[in-house]
Image 1 (tube, one colour):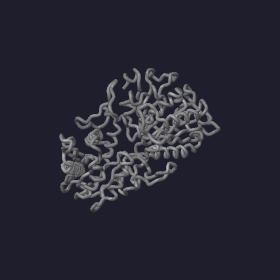
Image 2 (cartoon, rainbow, N blue to C red; image 1 turned 90 degrees about the vertical axis):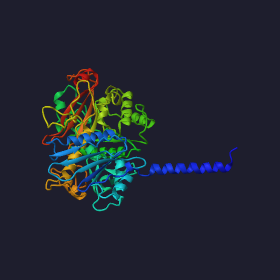
Image 3 (cartoon, rainbow, N blue to C red; image 1 turned 135 degrees about the vertical axis):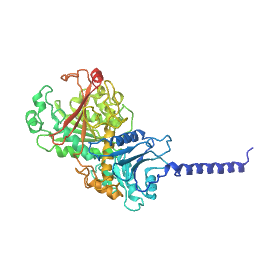
Image 4 (cartoon, helix red, strand yellow; image 1 turned 135 degrees about the horizontal axis):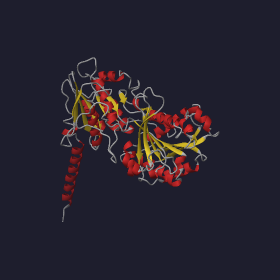
Length: 532
């Protein structure tokens, strides 16, 4: 028989072991402490989760390709990637950037955010080390960017505070808990030394809305006959005069998922953009936007939730009269968008003739290209879909033009029948490296920037300007839109009779009027397999 005192003793021992394990798990280990920075060098801290290996690999590739000249960055960059992929997962990966003729090295280090060492704890650890980084790269979503900005604002920095470089945080406003509110705290103002390398939700909504309203095959209003080339080639007031806008407002739709601040913020921005741009004479009829506000976005891959099914029923019941096209704003990620659009097609197989869906950057271009067979089968989602991308997703290396990439870091176009990851992330990271390197190795000096203030001055002094005075990225510095155009059975042939759809990418070229098409890729079917 076990005596009670022994049970009590065992309980005390067990409690001590548990407390010790918890303390060990929460204590910073050797690999969870910032590395020292040698005299004369500078550091950029790259904060991301341990599972973000693909993002880091893309970042390293982008950094090596910054050695290529003639793409807007400083000449003479040399990138040492020998420590970028250490054998031990507990080690801190690092790349070293130097420039010919300059003293000092810029070291970019991946400090991995974990439950034991979240990004807020890393910020405090970096603030306690001398010297602290000149900049922190983070903000992989708007909510994480807000948390990081709060931590950097409140940290006890010694001397000039580091810059915060936001990579993918697009929300204009945060901290707005009213679902009817259109204003909140500007994200860029939470930490007053932040620079945003992505476009904002407002800029994305403006660009996508402008593109859709300038394309006669997508904009709301009377649908031009598909074989009427003269009508399809017109735009603006001339097209409006020929087609005639309906005298009554055309119903349009916006769905938002309230558990996702990105969704509610982008929905607001789209409604504002549609209201403002539709007022321009001849662009489109007046739109009466019906908002569907759903409680949550979690669900299955293809089956809509009860709330999404209800929204789908409302949209199908309120479509405009036949022969009239309208818009559906779907500001979300791939799963809710896919469920909702599939349900619309199942409820009305011809809904894509009257409805054009628009969104921001929440759905990766890899969803529509690399993973399309299962992630976005165009044959079962026959609704034109316009999305935003922050860079050219198909910027493969071309032998006939451009500088030669470093050996082992080539990006050849995929061969017939092949697919691979798009180039959007690489292009975005490459731009970040080039812009930061321009500020870190100023033309008027012979050594690396000595403080965050010098880097900030370099970023604000770029010619042409890349940032607004607020720190947001300037409009007109590389917006791209992508269009998924499903093929309907009676569409006129265009040389790809067996393709199920096309993926097109457009941008505004400097000196060009309107949007210019960069790529057209067939999706699905035998023609797609032969043409890629």
